Image 1 (tube, protein in one colour):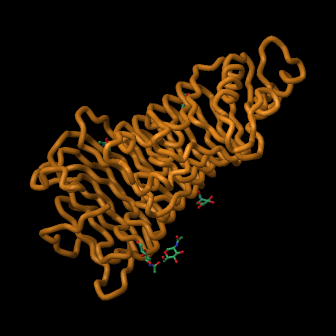
Image 2: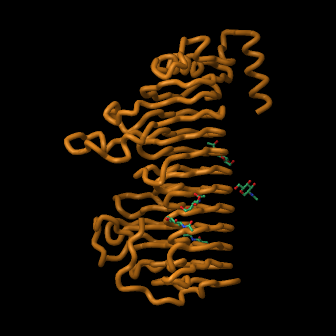
Image 3: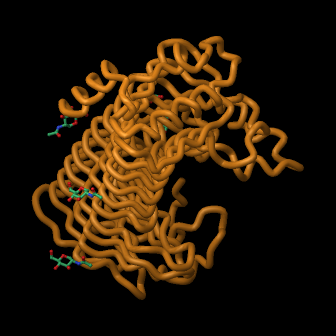
Length: 402
Ligand SMILES: *[C@@H]1O[C@H](CO)[C@@H](O)[C@H](O)[C@H]1NC(C)=O
Ligand SMILES: *[C@@H]1O[C@H](CO)[C@@H](O)[C@H](O)[C@H]1NC(C)=O
Ligand SMILES: *[C@@H]1O[C@H](CO)[C@@H](O)[C@H](O)[C@H]1NC(C)=O
Ligand SMILES: *[C@@H]1O[C@H](CO)[C@@H](O)[C@H](O)[C@H]1NC(C)=O
Ligand SMILES: *[C@@H]1O[C@H](CO)[C@@H](O)[C@H](O)[C@H]1NC(C)=O
């Protein structure tokens, strides 16, 4: 990083043929922090210059409030590139203003950094009630605030995404991308606003971040490998979820996910793996949940291979997704419902090598105490177990989960 900084300083001084240096969208490209002039053209012009530079460059969006209709920032670029957002960038409030499900997209860039302490405000509150969806197709393609597509070696640091109309951030086809001090903020009642959705990516880290939203805190789709989630605070929302898997054809394996040192408060799930009954085959292995604090979480530990919202599946069929090498270690706190531990695996492909160690989850209230239910799994058990592992019967009709 020091080398990068020195390089960019020297290129500013030299203003040599390589370009690079610091590009201020206001000073150089006439962007206006007036909340109405579209930032799109100044930003794209700055990107074009920075991307063509053969030495590292940094685009700065200074403090102030900007309006941005939409922008796709494409690579490949000739040298490392940083976008430093100090201000607040607002999206059009009208969901009908978007033709595609995206607001800001970073695409096919190597050595990219997004930083600056700034805010991306999707102004989604207008979309949350889903008013006027009938007769319009935009409700099926509401924009995602931030898309990171096919990036290699990227750092997303000190950035806030707020009130996206759909997912807050989406990671697709990336290799080595780290989110650090990433803040997500949206109300509990915002539908389908997953904090970070990750799919088909290798080497994703989500570190020391705070995610408050209406749907999953972090959701992990097929083709995710080598993920580390550490120091993340979730809630409200639906918790950290792998899946749903097994709905679509040709899903790639999920392999290697570590969720550690995380805190969940008032979420509907804590740590979860969900797969659809019937449908398509898949695999999910080497998944480790460790050092998790849950407070008032409805389903703190859950494997659900009968995941079937909206009756969209054949519930009497078994899931064809194979789950193996899964551990839950040192998970403690309080559950909002008695079903604190629920490990419901497929009868045709039972879960293999599941481990429960040091589980301490209490539930109080008229429906208590906490229970632990298992089916088609024989977990290896060690340390404290409260509730006693797999001690409760499975109800004929399982409680549906969000
Ligand atoms: C991604 O990171 C890993 C581990 O640091 C490294 O071995 C690998 O080369 C990186 N991939 C790319 C494409 O730079
Ligand atoms: C645990 O997470 C907190 C943030 O919630 C972070 O400050 C701390 O460094 C993390 N600890 C370790 C050992 O990673
Ligand atoms: C959890 O919910 C309770 C009751 O609604 C509320 O008082 C508390 O602030 C919430 N905690 C967090 C961290 O959101
Ligand atoms: C627990 O969370 C639920 C929402 O899931 C909330 O309604 C309730 O007030 C919370 N209770 C406490 C004690 O925080
Ligand atoms: C499960 O873990 C064992 C022991 O670490 C390893 O040999 C095996 O390959 C793993 N299974 C999968 C499907 O990755």
